[in-house]
Image 1 (spheres, rainbow, N blue to C red):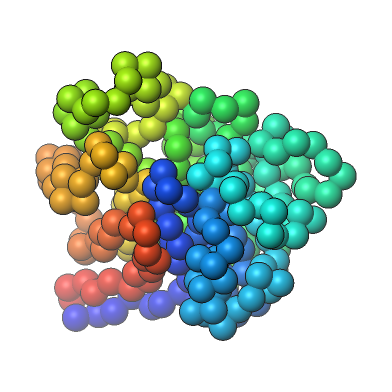
Image 2: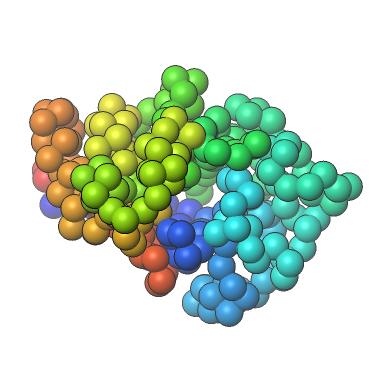
Length: 268
């Protein structure tokens, strides 16, 4: 067995779901926080697990302004916030990004990607990380979107790592006790990706370079980890992808940290 070389980029999801969302992406020089939808204790505990403090965060990225993604803004440094225009109230403190325009911090290059949610502004992100050997590894971060535009799909093709929304099971949502208007919103092009939609997108996107996928933002009421996993595996198997190694599949947790596997074994 050969072991693919480990990147010196790391990814930890602190929480994922309607109760709160936040992730850490980091290497030995740079610490990035994506969304701040958790309480201070959760953030402090996650940072403590990697021997860091809130003050050590170099960059804070926001995907959109729903409370489960920004409720912790009050205890972070606003001058470190970067997001597309319209996500938070305009001030002189935060930094405005443009969709599909890259910016760099140390060994990271970050590109905001267009998504579609029921807010005035939103985005996903592509992270490109320069390794010690000069190679580039990439992570696509997609959450809270009803569909993915073609220009976004272009940037997400054959990445090493994916953090990808797989929010609901269609049958569970339709038969749930949720109000009709809420069901309609979730199912719309400005809602969320279902298990089937996420798997179909990923069956198109993943390739020979892909190492790990984290399915994210699973609904507690209208989804289950096993349903999301089995739906993904069924659709991927139907796609008959010509990939010469297995791919790590993990599911982000609502109430606990989840690390993204950075290596995979492949047959000789």
